[in-house]
Length: 553
Image 1 (cartoon, rainbow, N blue to C red):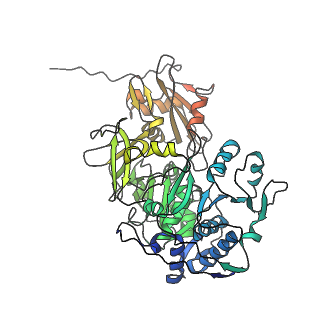
Image 2: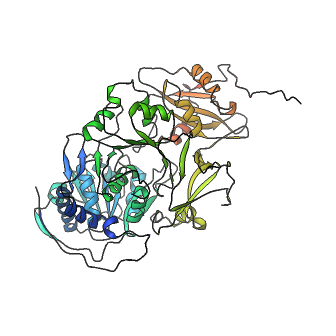
Image 3: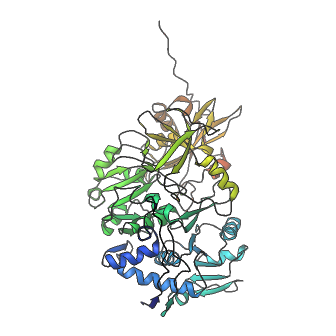
Protein backbone atom coordinates (compact mmCIF):
# COMPACT_ATOMS: atom_id res chain seq x y z
CA UNK A 1 0.00 0.00 0.00
CA UNK A 2 1.42 3.38 -1.03
CA UNK A 3 0.97 6.11 1.55
CA UNK A 4 -0.01 9.70 0.92
CA UNK A 5 3.03 11.48 2.37
CA UNK A 6 3.48 15.22 2.11
CA UNK A 7 7.18 16.05 2.32
CA UNK A 8 8.23 19.41 3.71
CA UNK A 9 11.10 21.13 1.93
CA UNK A 10 14.49 21.06 3.62
CA UNK A 11 16.00 24.36 4.72
CA UNK A 12 18.60 25.58 2.25
CA UNK A 13 22.16 26.17 3.35
CA UNK A 14 25.35 27.22 1.58
CA UNK A 15 27.70 24.43 0.56
CA UNK A 16 31.46 24.19 0.81
CA UNK A 17 33.66 25.18 -2.13
CA UNK A 18 36.23 22.50 -1.21
CA UNK A 19 36.63 20.47 -4.44
CA UNK A 20 37.33 17.31 -2.43
CA UNK A 21 33.73 17.29 -1.14
CA UNK A 22 31.13 16.10 -3.68
CA UNK A 23 27.76 17.92 -3.68
CA UNK A 24 24.98 16.67 -1.43
CA UNK A 25 23.05 15.02 -4.26
CA UNK A 26 26.01 12.74 -4.93
CA UNK A 27 26.54 11.67 -1.32
CA UNK A 28 23.61 12.28 1.07
CA UNK A 29 20.94 9.56 0.98
CA UNK A 30 17.98 11.93 1.17
CA UNK A 31 19.18 14.13 -1.69
CA UNK A 32 20.17 11.10 -3.75
CA UNK A 33 16.82 9.34 -3.34
CA UNK A 34 14.96 12.46 -4.46
CA UNK A 35 17.34 12.88 -7.38
CA UNK A 36 17.18 9.30 -8.69
CA UNK A 37 13.38 9.14 -8.35
CA UNK A 38 13.24 12.30 -10.47
CA UNK A 39 15.97 11.47 -13.02
CA UNK A 40 15.66 7.67 -13.45
CA UNK A 41 12.33 6.55 -11.98
CA UNK A 42 12.08 3.44 -14.14
CA UNK A 43 15.55 2.10 -13.45
CA UNK A 44 15.67 -1.02 -11.25
CA UNK A 45 17.48 -0.34 -7.99
CA UNK A 46 16.96 -3.73 -6.30
CA UNK A 47 16.20 -7.15 -7.77
CA UNK A 48 15.39 -9.88 -5.23
CA UNK A 49 16.71 -13.36 -5.90
CA UNK A 50 14.05 -15.23 -3.91
CA UNK A 51 11.04 -14.04 -5.94
CA UNK A 52 12.42 -12.05 -8.87
CA UNK A 53 10.64 -8.94 -7.52
CA UNK A 54 12.10 -5.60 -8.64
CA UNK A 55 12.03 -2.17 -7.03
CA UNK A 56 12.66 0.78 -9.30
CA UNK A 57 13.91 4.11 -7.96
CA UNK A 58 10.48 5.56 -8.66
CA UNK A 59 8.80 2.81 -6.61
CA UNK A 60 11.39 2.84 -3.84
CA UNK A 61 11.10 6.50 -2.84
CA UNK A 62 7.43 6.26 -1.69
CA UNK A 63 8.34 3.16 0.34
CA UNK A 64 11.12 5.05 2.10
CA UNK A 65 8.92 8.10 2.69
CA UNK A 66 6.21 5.95 4.27
CA UNK A 67 8.65 4.24 6.65
CA UNK A 68 10.37 7.54 7.44
CA UNK A 69 6.98 9.03 8.33
CA UNK A 70 6.29 6.12 10.68
CA UNK A 71 9.67 6.54 12.38
CA UNK A 72 9.10 10.27 12.73
CA UNK A 73 5.69 9.67 14.29
CA UNK A 74 7.47 7.47 16.85
CA UNK A 75 9.72 10.37 17.75
CA UNK A 76 12.83 9.80 15.61
CA UNK A 77 14.56 13.08 14.78
CA UNK A 78 17.67 14.21 12.95
CA UNK A 79 20.80 12.98 14.74
CA UNK A 80 19.02 10.21 16.67
CA UNK A 81 20.51 6.71 16.69
CA UNK A 82 18.14 3.92 15.61
CA UNK A 83 19.02 0.30 16.39
CA UNK A 84 18.10 -2.19 13.66
CA UNK A 85 18.26 -5.86 14.62
CA UNK A 86 16.98 -7.84 11.68
CA UNK A 87 18.26 -10.37 9.14
CA UNK A 88 18.49 -9.37 5.50
CA UNK A 89 14.95 -8.61 4.41
CA UNK A 90 12.94 -6.01 2.55
CA UNK A 91 11.93 -4.25 5.76
CA UNK A 92 15.58 -3.83 6.77
CA UNK A 93 16.31 -2.05 3.49
CA UNK A 94 13.35 0.31 3.93
CA UNK A 95 14.36 1.14 7.49
CA UNK A 96 17.99 1.78 6.50
CA UNK A 97 17.08 4.39 3.92
CA UNK A 98 14.22 5.83 5.99
CA UNK A 99 16.49 6.41 9.00
CA UNK A 100 18.95 8.29 6.82
CA UNK A 101 16.17 10.20 5.05
CA UNK A 102 15.36 11.73 8.43
CA UNK A 103 19.02 12.57 9.01
CA UNK A 104 19.16 9.94 11.77
CA UNK A 105 21.92 7.34 12.21
CA UNK A 106 21.47 3.70 11.19
CA UNK A 107 22.88 1.33 13.85
CA UNK A 108 22.55 -2.32 12.77
CA UNK A 109 23.21 -5.17 15.23
CA UNK A 110 24.71 -8.56 14.45
CA UNK A 111 21.88 -11.10 14.57
CA UNK A 112 24.07 -13.51 16.56
CA UNK A 113 24.43 -11.13 19.52
CA UNK A 114 22.93 -12.01 22.85
CA UNK A 115 23.78 -11.72 26.54
CA UNK A 116 26.62 -9.42 27.57
CA UNK A 117 27.67 -8.51 24.02
CA UNK A 118 24.10 -7.52 23.11
CA UNK A 119 23.80 -5.45 26.29
CA UNK A 120 27.11 -3.73 25.51
CA UNK A 121 25.99 -2.71 22.02
CA UNK A 122 22.60 -1.47 23.19
CA UNK A 123 24.21 0.63 25.93
CA UNK A 124 26.91 1.95 23.64
CA UNK A 125 24.46 2.96 20.90
CA UNK A 126 22.49 5.54 22.96
CA UNK A 127 19.40 4.53 20.95
CA UNK A 128 15.90 5.17 22.25
CA UNK A 129 14.18 3.19 19.48
CA UNK A 130 14.96 -0.22 17.98
CA UNK A 131 13.46 -2.11 15.04
CA UNK A 132 13.70 -5.82 15.85
CA UNK A 133 12.71 -9.07 14.15
CA UNK A 134 10.20 -11.11 16.12
CA UNK A 135 12.53 -14.13 16.28
CA UNK A 136 15.14 -12.04 18.13
CA UNK A 137 13.07 -9.88 20.43
CA UNK A 138 12.92 -12.34 23.35
CA UNK A 139 16.67 -11.97 23.84
CA UNK A 140 16.00 -8.45 25.09
CA UNK A 141 14.49 -9.99 28.23
CA UNK A 142 17.93 -11.32 29.19
CA UNK A 143 19.81 -8.02 29.19
CA UNK A 144 19.78 -4.42 30.35
CA UNK A 145 18.21 -2.29 27.62
CA UNK A 146 19.86 0.98 28.73
CA UNK A 147 18.20 3.99 27.04
CA UNK A 148 15.81 1.97 24.86
CA UNK A 149 12.19 3.08 25.19
CA UNK A 150 10.38 1.70 22.13
CA UNK A 151 10.79 -1.54 20.17
CA UNK A 152 9.19 -1.88 16.74
CA UNK A 153 8.71 -5.61 16.19
CA UNK A 154 8.54 -7.28 12.78
CA UNK A 155 6.55 -10.51 12.97
CA UNK A 156 5.67 -12.36 16.16
CA UNK A 157 4.82 -9.91 18.94
CA UNK A 158 6.30 -10.48 22.42
CA UNK A 159 4.38 -10.38 25.66
CA UNK A 160 5.56 -9.04 28.96
CA UNK A 161 8.58 -7.16 27.60
CA UNK A 162 9.42 -4.23 29.88
CA UNK A 163 9.50 -1.80 26.97
CA UNK A 164 6.91 -0.17 24.75
CA UNK A 165 6.39 -2.50 21.79
CA UNK A 166 4.60 -1.69 18.54
CA UNK A 167 3.90 -3.72 15.42
CA UNK A 168 6.05 -2.95 12.38
CA UNK A 169 3.16 -2.79 9.92
CA UNK A 170 1.03 -0.60 12.18
CA UNK A 171 3.85 1.77 13.12
CA UNK A 172 6.04 2.00 10.02
CA UNK A 173 3.43 1.70 7.25
CA UNK A 174 1.13 4.67 7.99
CA UNK A 175 -1.53 5.55 5.42
CA UNK A 176 -0.83 9.28 5.28
CA UNK A 177 0.80 12.21 7.00
CA UNK A 178 3.19 15.14 6.75
CA UNK A 179 6.91 14.37 6.85
CA UNK A 180 8.64 17.27 8.56
CA UNK A 181 11.94 18.47 7.16
CA UNK A 182 15.10 17.99 9.22
CA UNK A 183 16.03 20.91 11.45
CA UNK A 184 18.98 21.64 9.17
CA UNK A 185 20.44 20.45 5.90
CA UNK A 186 21.91 16.93 6.04
CA UNK A 187 25.58 17.30 5.15
CA UNK A 188 28.07 14.83 3.60
CA UNK A 189 30.13 14.89 6.79
CA UNK A 190 27.17 14.08 9.06
CA UNK A 191 27.05 10.62 10.69
CA UNK A 192 25.33 8.04 8.50
CA UNK A 193 25.85 4.79 10.44
CA UNK A 194 27.53 3.01 13.32
CA UNK A 195 28.69 -0.47 12.40
CA UNK A 196 29.98 -2.68 15.20
CA UNK A 197 33.15 -4.67 14.63
CA UNK A 198 33.05 -8.42 15.10
CA UNK A 199 34.34 -8.25 18.66
CA UNK A 200 36.51 -11.37 18.26
CA UNK A 201 39.09 -10.18 20.83
CA UNK A 202 36.97 -7.95 23.07
CA UNK A 203 33.80 -5.87 23.22
CA UNK A 204 32.59 -4.73 19.82
CA UNK A 205 33.63 -1.22 18.83
CA UNK A 206 31.13 1.00 17.02
CA UNK A 207 32.70 2.44 13.86
CA UNK A 208 31.19 5.90 13.35
CA UNK A 209 30.92 6.66 9.64
CA UNK A 210 29.87 9.76 7.75
CA UNK A 211 28.20 9.76 4.35
CA UNK A 212 31.57 10.84 2.93
CA UNK A 213 33.28 7.85 4.50
CA UNK A 214 30.78 5.44 2.97
CA UNK A 215 31.01 7.24 -0.38
CA UNK A 216 34.81 7.02 -0.34
CA UNK A 217 34.81 3.40 0.85
CA UNK A 218 33.91 1.82 -2.47
CA UNK A 219 32.36 4.61 -4.50
CA UNK A 220 33.03 5.72 -8.07
CA UNK A 221 36.51 7.05 -7.26
CA UNK A 222 37.69 4.05 -5.25
CA UNK A 223 36.24 1.41 -7.61
CA UNK A 224 36.07 3.21 -10.99
CA UNK A 225 35.59 -0.08 -12.86
CA UNK A 226 32.16 -0.54 -11.21
CA UNK A 227 29.75 1.74 -13.02
CA UNK A 228 26.15 2.96 -12.97
CA UNK A 229 25.34 0.26 -15.54
CA UNK A 230 26.31 -2.57 -13.18
CA UNK A 231 24.26 -4.73 -10.84
CA UNK A 232 26.19 -5.71 -7.70
CA UNK A 233 25.52 -8.84 -5.66
CA UNK A 234 24.54 -8.28 -2.02
CA UNK A 235 24.83 -11.51 -0.01
CA UNK A 236 26.52 -10.22 3.14
CA UNK A 237 24.35 -9.26 6.14
CA UNK A 238 23.18 -5.67 6.45
CA UNK A 239 24.96 -5.29 9.78
CA UNK A 240 28.23 -5.80 7.87
CA UNK A 241 30.03 -3.28 5.66
CA UNK A 242 29.76 -5.78 2.79
CA UNK A 243 25.95 -5.67 2.93
CA UNK A 244 24.93 -2.16 3.93
CA UNK A 245 28.00 -0.50 2.40
CA UNK A 246 27.67 -2.36 -0.89
CA UNK A 247 24.06 -1.29 -1.21
CA UNK A 248 24.85 2.33 -0.45
CA UNK A 249 27.80 2.67 -2.87
CA UNK A 250 25.70 1.29 -5.74
CA UNK A 251 22.94 3.69 -4.72
CA UNK A 252 25.31 6.66 -5.04
CA UNK A 253 26.07 5.53 -8.60
CA UNK A 254 22.38 5.36 -9.44
CA UNK A 255 23.12 1.71 -10.20
CA UNK A 256 21.49 -1.57 -9.18
CA UNK A 257 21.90 -4.40 -6.66
CA UNK A 258 20.89 -8.04 -6.57
CA UNK A 259 19.68 -9.00 -3.09
CA UNK A 260 20.39 -12.59 -2.04
CA UNK A 261 19.45 -14.26 1.23
CA UNK A 262 22.98 -15.65 1.52
CA UNK A 263 25.89 -17.06 -0.46
CA UNK A 264 25.32 -20.67 -1.52
CA UNK A 265 27.95 -22.49 -3.58
CA UNK A 266 25.56 -24.89 -5.27
CA UNK A 267 23.11 -22.21 -6.43
CA UNK A 268 25.51 -19.28 -6.89
CA UNK A 269 25.65 -19.15 -10.68
CA UNK A 270 21.91 -19.80 -10.94
CA UNK A 271 21.33 -16.78 -8.67
CA UNK A 272 23.69 -14.68 -10.76
CA UNK A 273 21.78 -15.67 -13.88
CA UNK A 274 18.32 -15.02 -12.38
CA UNK A 275 19.26 -11.61 -11.01
CA UNK A 276 21.37 -10.57 -14.03
CA UNK A 277 24.23 -9.67 -11.71
CA UNK A 278 27.32 -8.17 -13.34
CA UNK A 279 29.64 -7.66 -10.31
CA UNK A 280 30.14 -10.08 -7.42
CA UNK A 281 32.27 -9.99 -4.28
CA UNK A 282 33.83 -13.31 -3.24
CA UNK A 283 35.03 -13.03 0.34
CA UNK A 284 37.28 -15.50 2.11
CA UNK A 285 36.90 -19.01 0.71
CA UNK A 286 33.90 -18.32 -1.54
CA UNK A 287 36.14 -18.42 -4.64
CA UNK A 288 37.70 -21.70 -3.50
CA UNK A 289 34.23 -23.17 -2.98
CA UNK A 290 33.28 -22.28 -6.56
CA UNK A 291 36.56 -23.56 -8.01
CA UNK A 292 36.12 -26.94 -6.36
CA UNK A 293 32.67 -27.46 -7.81
CA UNK A 294 32.65 -29.82 -10.84
CA UNK A 295 32.90 -27.83 -14.10
CA UNK A 296 29.68 -27.45 -16.00
CA UNK A 297 27.76 -25.34 -18.53
CA UNK A 298 26.55 -22.95 -15.81
CA UNK A 299 30.13 -21.75 -15.30
CA UNK A 300 29.68 -19.23 -18.12
CA UNK A 301 25.90 -19.04 -18.32
CA UNK A 302 25.62 -15.66 -16.58
CA UNK A 303 26.24 -11.92 -17.05
CA UNK A 304 28.89 -11.48 -14.36
CA UNK A 305 31.74 -9.54 -15.92
CA UNK A 306 34.00 -9.04 -12.90
CA UNK A 307 34.47 -10.41 -9.40
CA UNK A 308 36.36 -9.23 -6.36
CA UNK A 309 38.41 -12.06 -4.86
CA UNK A 310 39.50 -11.22 -1.32
CA UNK A 311 42.02 -12.59 -0.54
CA UNK A 312 43.57 -13.30 -3.91
CA UNK A 313 44.42 -17.00 -3.99
CA UNK A 314 44.65 -19.93 -6.34
CA UNK A 315 45.14 -19.84 -10.11
CA UNK A 316 43.64 -16.48 -11.13
CA UNK A 317 44.10 -17.06 -14.85
CA UNK A 318 42.32 -20.43 -14.63
CA UNK A 319 39.46 -18.94 -12.56
CA UNK A 320 39.06 -16.08 -15.05
CA UNK A 321 39.09 -18.41 -18.04
CA UNK A 322 36.70 -20.96 -16.54
CA UNK A 323 34.05 -18.48 -15.41
CA UNK A 324 34.60 -15.80 -18.07
CA UNK A 325 35.18 -12.96 -15.59
CA UNK A 326 37.83 -10.38 -14.78
CA UNK A 327 39.24 -10.77 -11.27
CA UNK A 328 40.10 -7.84 -8.99
CA UNK A 329 41.30 -7.80 -5.42
CA UNK A 330 41.50 -5.12 -2.74
CA UNK A 331 42.37 -4.49 0.88
CA UNK A 332 39.66 -2.83 2.89
CA UNK A 333 38.03 -2.83 6.33
CA UNK A 334 35.04 -1.13 7.94
CA UNK A 335 37.11 1.79 9.21
CA UNK A 336 38.90 2.76 5.99
CA UNK A 337 38.15 3.25 2.27
CA UNK A 338 39.75 0.75 -0.13
CA UNK A 339 43.32 2.11 -0.02
CA UNK A 340 44.74 -0.84 -1.99
CA UNK A 341 43.14 -1.92 -5.29
CA UNK A 342 44.49 -4.20 -8.01
CA UNK A 343 44.41 -4.10 -11.77
CA UNK A 344 42.21 -6.72 -13.49
CA UNK A 345 43.53 -10.29 -13.35
CA UNK A 346 46.70 -9.55 -11.36
CA UNK A 347 49.56 -11.90 -12.14
CA UNK A 348 51.49 -11.19 -8.92
CA UNK A 349 50.58 -14.05 -6.57
CA UNK A 350 49.19 -13.05 -3.19
CA UNK A 351 49.03 -9.31 -3.82
CA UNK A 352 46.27 -6.99 -2.64
CA UNK A 353 47.14 -4.47 -5.35
CA UNK A 354 48.68 -1.00 -5.29
CA UNK A 355 47.80 2.20 -3.49
CA UNK A 356 44.97 4.08 -5.17
CA UNK A 357 44.85 7.83 -5.74
CA UNK A 358 43.46 9.86 -2.84
CA UNK A 359 45.05 7.88 -0.01
CA UNK A 360 48.45 7.74 1.68
CA UNK A 361 49.78 4.43 3.00
CA UNK A 362 52.77 3.69 5.23
CA UNK A 363 54.19 0.45 6.63
CA UNK A 364 55.76 1.03 10.05
CA UNK A 365 57.39 -0.65 13.02
CA UNK A 366 56.12 -0.51 16.61
CA UNK A 367 57.35 3.09 16.90
CA UNK A 368 55.51 4.26 13.76
CA UNK A 369 58.83 4.51 11.89
CA UNK A 370 58.66 3.40 8.26
CA UNK A 371 60.17 0.07 7.30
CA UNK A 372 61.96 -0.53 3.96
CA UNK A 373 60.44 -2.43 1.03
CA UNK A 374 60.40 -6.15 1.64
CA UNK A 375 60.10 -5.72 5.42
CA UNK A 376 56.89 -6.47 7.29
CA UNK A 377 55.21 -3.56 9.03
CA UNK A 378 51.79 -2.44 10.23
CA UNK A 379 49.74 -0.63 7.59
CA UNK A 380 48.81 2.98 8.39
CA UNK A 381 46.33 4.90 6.21
CA UNK A 382 44.97 8.41 5.74
CA UNK A 383 43.00 10.12 2.96
CA UNK A 384 43.29 13.54 1.36
CA UNK A 385 39.49 14.00 1.62
CA UNK A 386 38.12 15.26 4.94
CA UNK A 387 35.79 12.67 6.49
CA UNK A 388 36.95 10.10 3.91
CA UNK A 389 37.51 7.50 6.64
CA UNK A 390 35.90 6.61 9.96
CA UNK A 391 35.07 9.34 12.47
CA UNK A 392 36.35 7.25 15.39
CA UNK A 393 34.85 4.59 17.62
CA UNK A 394 31.62 5.80 19.18
CA UNK A 395 31.92 6.51 22.92
CA UNK A 396 35.37 4.92 22.97
CA UNK A 397 37.94 7.74 23.04
CA UNK A 398 40.73 5.44 24.22
CA UNK A 399 40.37 3.09 21.23
CA UNK A 400 39.99 6.07 18.89
CA UNK A 401 43.19 7.65 20.21
CA UNK A 402 45.11 4.37 19.85
CA UNK A 403 43.90 3.81 16.31
CA UNK A 404 44.46 7.40 15.14
CA UNK A 405 47.76 8.15 16.91
CA UNK A 406 50.17 10.44 15.08
CA UNK A 407 47.45 11.43 12.62
CA UNK A 408 47.29 8.08 10.82
CA UNK A 409 44.76 5.26 11.16
CA UNK A 410 46.46 2.08 12.40
CA UNK A 411 44.84 -0.93 10.71
CA UNK A 412 46.32 -3.61 12.98
CA UNK A 413 47.30 -5.55 9.84
CA UNK A 414 50.84 -6.59 8.92
CA UNK A 415 51.88 -6.02 5.29
CA UNK A 416 54.96 -5.90 3.14
CA UNK A 417 55.49 -3.90 -0.05
CA UNK A 418 57.73 -4.81 -2.96
CA UNK A 419 59.84 -2.50 -5.11
CA UNK A 420 57.06 -2.25 -7.72
CA UNK A 421 54.57 -0.86 -5.19
CA UNK A 422 52.51 -4.03 -4.71
CA UNK A 423 51.22 -4.68 -1.19
CA UNK A 424 50.96 -8.15 0.36
CA UNK A 425 48.83 -8.96 3.37
CA UNK A 426 50.86 -10.96 5.89
CA UNK A 427 48.52 -11.34 8.87
CA UNK A 428 46.48 -9.66 11.50
CA UNK A 429 49.10 -8.45 13.97
CA UNK A 430 47.37 -10.49 16.69
CA UNK A 431 47.24 -13.68 14.56
CA UNK A 432 50.93 -13.97 13.65
CA UNK A 433 52.52 -17.25 14.79
CA UNK A 434 56.01 -17.39 16.32
CA UNK A 435 57.85 -20.72 15.91
CA UNK A 436 61.50 -21.36 16.71
CA UNK A 437 62.51 -17.79 16.09
CA UNK A 438 60.52 -17.47 12.86
CA UNK A 439 57.45 -15.31 12.32
CA UNK A 440 54.78 -17.21 10.40
CA UNK A 441 51.81 -15.70 8.57
CA UNK A 442 48.64 -17.64 9.30
CA UNK A 443 47.24 -16.22 6.06
CA UNK A 444 50.07 -17.74 3.98
CA UNK A 445 49.73 -21.11 5.71
CA UNK A 446 45.98 -21.11 5.02
CA UNK A 447 46.47 -20.25 1.35
CA UNK A 448 48.73 -23.27 0.82
CA UNK A 449 46.51 -25.63 2.83
CA UNK A 450 43.41 -24.65 0.84
CA UNK A 451 45.32 -25.37 -2.37
CA UNK A 452 45.05 -29.09 -1.53
CA UNK A 453 42.19 -30.56 -3.60
CA UNK A 454 40.52 -32.22 -0.60
CA UNK A 455 40.49 -29.10 1.61
CA UNK A 456 37.52 -26.76 1.45
CA UNK A 457 38.52 -24.30 4.15
CA UNK A 458 41.39 -23.75 6.61
CA UNK A 459 42.34 -21.67 9.62
CA UNK A 460 45.88 -21.61 11.03
CA UNK A 461 46.65 -20.74 14.63
CA UNK A 462 49.57 -20.97 17.02
CA UNK A 463 49.32 -23.34 20.00
CA UNK A 464 51.81 -23.46 22.87
CA UNK A 465 54.84 -25.67 22.37
CA UNK A 466 56.06 -27.89 25.23
CA UNK A 467 59.42 -26.10 25.23
CA UNK A 468 58.81 -22.50 24.07
CA UNK A 469 56.97 -20.32 21.57
CA UNK A 470 54.35 -22.03 19.39
CA UNK A 471 53.55 -24.83 16.98
CA UNK A 472 51.27 -24.47 13.96
CA UNK A 473 47.80 -26.03 14.08
CA UNK A 474 45.56 -26.01 11.02
CA UNK A 475 41.82 -26.49 11.37
CA UNK A 476 40.41 -27.78 8.09
CA UNK A 477 37.12 -28.81 6.52
CA UNK A 478 36.87 -31.28 3.62
CA UNK A 479 35.40 -30.68 0.20
CA UNK A 480 31.93 -32.31 0.20
CA UNK A 481 32.24 -35.99 -0.64
CA UNK A 482 35.96 -36.18 0.21
CA UNK A 483 38.06 -36.88 3.30
CA UNK A 484 41.28 -35.30 4.49
CA UNK A 485 44.28 -37.54 5.12
CA UNK A 486 46.65 -35.58 7.40
CA UNK A 487 49.70 -37.52 6.18
CA UNK A 488 48.90 -36.75 2.53
CA UNK A 489 48.25 -33.11 3.44
CA UNK A 490 51.64 -32.77 5.14
CA UNK A 491 53.41 -34.34 2.17
CA UNK A 492 51.61 -31.89 -0.11
CA UNK A 493 52.67 -28.93 2.05
CA UNK A 494 56.32 -29.98 2.34
CA UNK A 495 56.79 -29.14 -1.31
CA UNK A 496 55.06 -25.77 -1.06
CA UNK A 497 56.23 -24.03 2.11
CA UNK A 498 59.25 -23.40 4.31
CA UNK A 499 59.95 -26.23 6.75
CA UNK A 500 59.14 -24.12 9.80
CA UNK A 501 55.67 -23.32 8.42
CA UNK A 502 54.58 -26.95 7.92
CA UNK A 503 51.86 -27.61 10.52
CA UNK A 504 52.51 -29.97 13.40
CA UNK A 505 48.80 -30.40 14.15
CA UNK A 506 45.82 -31.04 11.87
CA UNK A 507 42.29 -30.90 13.21
CA UNK A 508 39.40 -31.79 10.88
CA UNK A 509 36.06 -30.01 11.37
CA UNK A 510 32.74 -30.58 9.66
CA UNK A 511 32.41 -26.78 9.68
CA UNK A 512 34.65 -24.07 11.11
CA UNK A 513 33.10 -21.85 13.81
CA UNK A 514 32.21 -18.49 12.30
CA UNK A 515 30.59 -15.16 13.00
CA UNK A 516 27.46 -14.27 10.95
CA UNK A 517 29.74 -12.10 8.79
CA UNK A 518 31.64 -15.29 7.83
CA UNK A 519 34.81 -14.58 9.78
CA UNK A 520 36.38 -17.67 11.33
CA UNK A 521 36.34 -17.54 15.11
CA UNK A 522 40.01 -18.28 15.54
CA UNK A 523 39.84 -17.36 19.21
CA UNK A 524 37.43 -20.27 19.72
CA UNK A 525 39.75 -22.75 17.97
CA UNK A 526 42.73 -21.28 19.85
CA UNK A 527 40.95 -21.61 23.20
CA UNK A 528 40.28 -25.32 22.57
CA UNK A 529 43.89 -25.88 21.49
CA UNK A 530 45.10 -29.42 20.88
CA UNK A 531 42.03 -31.61 21.40
CA UNK A 532 41.92 -35.43 21.62
CA UNK A 533 40.84 -35.65 17.98
CA UNK A 534 43.74 -33.49 16.74
CA UNK A 535 46.31 -35.33 14.62
CA UNK A 536 49.94 -34.74 15.70
CA UNK A 537 52.64 -35.02 13.05
CA UNK A 538 55.40 -35.68 15.59
CA UNK A 539 53.46 -38.48 17.28
CA UNK A 540 52.97 -39.95 13.82
CA UNK A 541 56.75 -40.01 13.46
CA UNK A 542 56.92 -37.50 10.60
CA UNK A 543 59.85 -35.10 10.86
CA UNK A 544 60.16 -32.00 8.71
CA UNK A 545 63.68 -30.66 8.62
CA UNK A 546 65.35 -27.69 7.00
CA UNK A 547 67.12 -28.13 3.67
CA UNK A 548 70.88 -28.51 4.02
CA UNK A 549 73.19 -27.03 1.44
CA UNK A 550 76.86 -27.77 0.95
CA UNK A 551 78.74 -24.55 0.38
CA UNK A 552 81.47 -24.80 -2.22
CA UNK A 553 84.23 -22.33 -2.89
